[in-house]
Each structure stands twice: as structure tokens, then as C-alpha cells.
Image 1 (tube, one colour):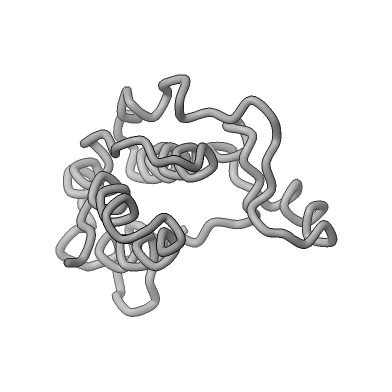
Image 2 (cartoon, rainbow, N blue to C red):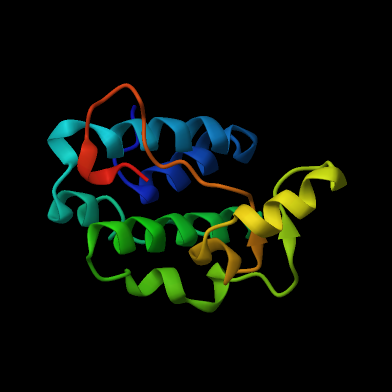
Length: 137
């Protein structure tokens, strides 16, 4: 099943293991970038439904950061669930284990993730598989 929403990503991660989260996100980005889903209304529909909370707070913050990032670039409202307290980290967290990349992540992380205390570096929410210019980051 290809995840067609962030809620689908969380459901799949819960059912098949949070260690597969990145795979499900890649599939979501592919769906998000499909030419049939390039309008603001279609982009909004993919972020509107609230994802279940996962056991890793970092993943909950990441899902909310993606929702806010997609909303900003599509010029639609950020879903209310994305600003809930469970979608923010109390302490800074760096996505990745190598301390050598922390400086890079501090500089490159987009605002929707940075304000959630999640430093993940540049976030590419576009699949080169499709030619959906309106959602290219």
C-alpha cells in the first residue's frame, strides 16, 4: 500500500515497525509529487488527517514538520494537529548518529523542523520520478 497521507505513513510505521519509517516517507513523497496531486487542495488533503502518535517523539515531530512544510509551500493552512504539544521536542534532537554532521544540520534544517527542535538537514519533499513543478522544493 502506498501511503497517500501522513496519517498513512504513521499507520504503516506502527503496523510494520518504526524502523521502516524512512521507507514509508519516501513512498509518501513519491505520492505527494505525482502530477495528479499537485494542486493546493490535493496537497492539503494529504496532510489534513492526524497521524497516530508513534513511540519515537522524533518521528512525531518530523511528521508535523512535513505537514507544516507542505502547507507553507502549497499556501494552505497548517493542520491543527501539527501544532499540538506532542509534535514538538523539548530538547534538540539531531537526525543521524554522526556528530560531524550536526553543524551542517543546524544550518540546513528548514524552519518547520527547526522550530520543533528537530535538526535533520535539508528536507527534500519532491520525487524526481514525476514532473510536478508546483511542489518542487
